[in-house]
Image (cartoon, rainbow, N blue to C red; front, side):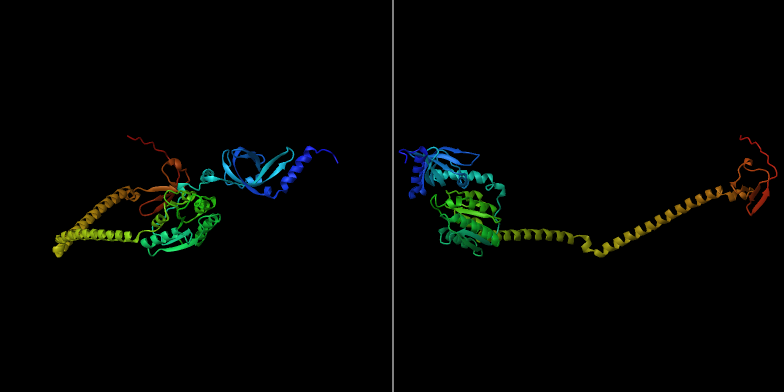
Length: 405
């Protein structure tokens, strides 16, 4: 046996001692992050955890780091769960982190700011995507604890304002680790049910930690994806959560949420009475106006002496009939005169009139002959007279020169 140890043997021996310690296998440690580095290629996180007097190197591998819901930063105080072991090649021990969460109010606020920025980039808080509340809701869905004061406040106000409204309750834890999943499931169940006009999600006041379920991404996503309008009523007036930013309407308290959800029947009844009285006054004025118009019409001569009016219109129609008949006769006479003149003009141009004076028309098979140049001796010609036709043969032809003076 060698009287000495190698460096590797020593480091391995120390590593075995640490790995064999039950306490160091799994424990929670609080400290402040320092020297934080994220290696993009591997995705591993390397940092130092320190307090006022000491520090320890830590690593969080990519498979664990990808589950973080916040971004670690230098100076952030955190709680980590992990184990301690020796990194043999360098002979130093370090903390291997399995889980990490912010510690204290400052850390939680930083976590919420990071989550808010992340959800805002996804469009969960966009104002243009907010849905309007129905004017007259008849059935309200409520996601809250069945034992909480918030539900009693909501039911009391709904009974005061609208006794006929129905309430569908989905019981849910409103604080604790199981609350986010139950609240989100309640919103989804009411959307699947589909028989409510809107949803109220909320709880009474509480500590900052009590309201944390309404700051979870799971609840915010369920509100954003809801097809039904959602009223957020979390805590008191000064309390704001991410659920308030995602909701279609934010109510300062559960009481105000109930007031926003339904119309006040008593107020509506008063408005209806006022409108009814206004309508009666309008109809009375209209009837008075129409009565005055009728009175003026009844004073017209047409209503006082209708027979005389009919006789006058009959006489007027008779005069129009006579005028129209005369106009038609004049029009016919004028047309006849124009027709006679046209016939006379056509008769003067007619070949028959010329033939009555002893003229004849000479033609052959080609048509009417107008010149001796169109015939030759021996041609057979037809001569048309007024009362018949002659056939002749040309023996000779002579051309006569005529002078137009």
